[in-house]
Structures are given as C-alpha cells and as structure tokens.
Image: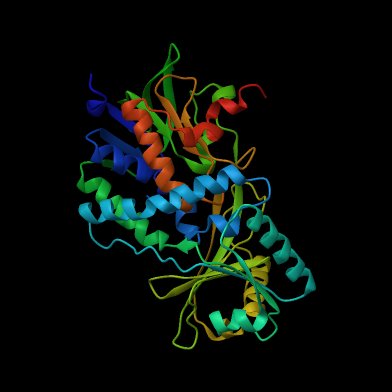
Length: 375
Ligand code: GLY
C-alpha cells in the first residue's frame, strides 16, 4: 500500500497534532484527529505565541535553541502554504524581544544572559534604561537596563489554530472532537487501531500528540509511554487601548507581555506543579499583574478580557519527544513544554517526512523517544 493511502490517526488536536494532520492530508494521506475536548483549546490556546528561541534559551539547551531557530525560519513557508489552503492566516510579527531589568539583580541576570548569547554569536545587545524606553516608551521610568534580541518573533497562536483547523478540514481531514481515545491497540509490536468511546478505527499509523495527557493512553506498554507531566501556566488577556500599545515582546525575569494582532495584550505566565488542575488562582493572577505593572505601569487602566490556565506538557528532560517509537507505526510528537508554538513547523515537516518517506531528519536526533529506553 502506498503510504499516502494509509489511514493515520492522530491523538490530540493541539498545535502539533493539527499541524501534522494538515501536512499529512496536504500530501494525500487519510487522517483523523481525535481530541478529547475542543480542537486547539488546551495548552496551544493558552500560549503567549512567542517564537523566541533567543530569549528563551537557557544555558543547557543549545540544541533546543537551534531547533527553535530552524523552526522559526520555517514559519514563512508554513504560513504561505496555509494561505494557499485557507483564509484568515495570522502574520509573522518579527518584533524582537526586549528583556527589561528593574534593579541590580535583574541587570546582573541580563548581563549573564547577554554574555552567554554572545558566546553563541547571536545578535544581542545590552541597553540602558533610557535606550530601552526609546524602543518601548511605555516602560516604567524605574527600568534601569535591558537586553535587546532583534531576531525573536511572535504570532497570534489562536488565529493560527483556527486557520490550521480550517485548512485540515478543507483538505479532507476528519476531526473527531469531544472524543476520548480509550486505547491504542497493539498486536505483535505493531499498531493496529485506536479505540474511542464510539468506535474502533483501524489505523496503519498512530501519532500521539496529546500533550500532557500523552502518558495516559491504555494499550501502550508502560515503558514505551512518553514520560510527561503537566506544568500549569496561568495567563491574563487584556484589551489594548490607544494609550497602551506595545511594539513587541517585553520580558522580565518574572513575566512576559505580548501584544496580539486581535487587539489584546497577553500576560504570562506562572509555572506551577498542580497536577491536572487548570483553575486560575487569585494569588497567581495578582502576582502576574503586579510584575507586569512594575514594568509597564500603563496596563493599570486596561480592561481585563480573560484569565485562564493551561497545562504545558513537560517531559523528564524538558525536551520534546518526536519520532517513531519501538512499536512499529506508533509515533510521538509531544512534550513540547514551553515551546509548542515555536517548535511546531520543524516538528511537523520533519515528522511528516518520517511518516510518509521514512526519512529521519538529523534535526530529530536529540529528541527521539528511544533516549528514555535505558532509564
Ligand atoms: N513559552 C512561554 C510559556 O510557556 O509560558
């Protein structure tokens, strides 16, 4: 059978599952996405939409930063293809990140981040408080230092999710939302079907893109399950007013603010270990608002639109898990942690090549599921 006529089931309709499904149907495969809730309404919806490999890289994550950089470079191709398939496609906003510091402690942190990035030959610059305000006039007079990262970008992740769902369906993909997969049926080391409350769907291949729920699938032997836990992140959405327009992403060590294309401003995010509890809390919301107000006092007057929490899929080593598992035909694309929106294009293009052409991309080498086998 040609790979393109195979039936592929994707478990999880977030940005990763949708992206893989859309690219697979674009290349002629028959795809059904199973989503236990609403398509695109979990972690991908709650994300800030930052495509910021240079701001977000930490000292031990250079491979992840390079993966993010390559993925960001693939966004223009992905958005062009999306525009061929549907309307209302978001723009890639190459706005850069301005990291701001308010005291000596923050400034020392920014200096360390700057030095590390310079060692990696990234385009990065320390600026004074005055220079930071020239770039972003709404920054508080108390801001004393900044780190400017011109190559970061952002996108309206919610608009992107809606466009990708439309494109997937338009190209012939099938969405089964509010449909929980109860079991992945495996026989003789090969995947056979996915079993939901409603039906058994014979699948030649199955992709697990179920975020922090990826470890909960019956049928997959325990040692083969991706080791993922939920990390709660609360955000706040405000309405931008004429008096409070930001030019790009503002970060401090305690929060980020991202102006969105739909006229809102997104403020994030907490990082909490609360199991699967997604309820926003008063204390965390108060702290986020205080941290944002400290950097940008003008947010004080903004109307609140929404407070919401999502569950980041955090792997054991905080790296994504991408590729075919030891069970033939069973693929993982999960564990994208804080970076699902940024890492989506490369994850999607590389995994779709692996599924349809059996080409394993070098980009995926550090992120294969097999790295957990010996542990
Ligand atoms: N990448 C931003 C967050 O996880 O909050």
